[in-house]
Image (cartoon, rainbow, N blue to C red; front, side):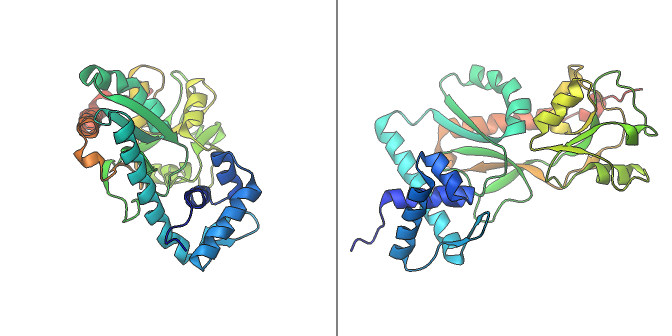
Length: 299
């Protein structure tokens, strides 16, 4: 009997753990749900212990599964880098994974400056809607919006930011009328309308809010004049400077989450990755320097 299980069983395990769903794993792997389930059963028989607790609507990793997952991901990561090194020039290929909102509203408007400074680097950018459990296999650098990432992930804080309401220029709103306005926010955030209102001194414990899974939706509503959204200073400052949004009130609340930079072990010796990391750090520092002097509020 081999000491190693078949690679397709491990791929099914990693995808199932990432999605906490056999259905989600089947979608990612272009397989049937029953085929994924059978491969997991085969892997569990090989291991001699269960890797998942099966619940009615979701999976949960067992202690064995939690211990095995980083081993499998590290192995896939090593395979991915080794394969790319043998099949094409790896030196200047950089794979970046980013929080969706950061990628759209901070990274995309500035990426031309990185390309101009480093035309030799071939970028491949992927986005994540929800916080991943670990840096994805094959990814060199990740920008993650999160509470402090897991200890097994090397992460450094890029920006611990403030948040505040934003709306379209000229949108008619005052503190007194705010409770009657359409309010939008991203779900599952620590910084909320209720927290901001309490710090602002408003007697308003449960404001009515429409939630979406991404800030991009709520910010688009605000820019169109459909209501007010909460915006992270790092994300909305450029929109304010371009006149697309205004901050109607002066109070800024401190976020409990932060934007983190995560590097794979290989990235720390890759010239392309270090060029991107240095550019990113400078860009964040430039974005945050003098912010209070550049931001105005709506009269």
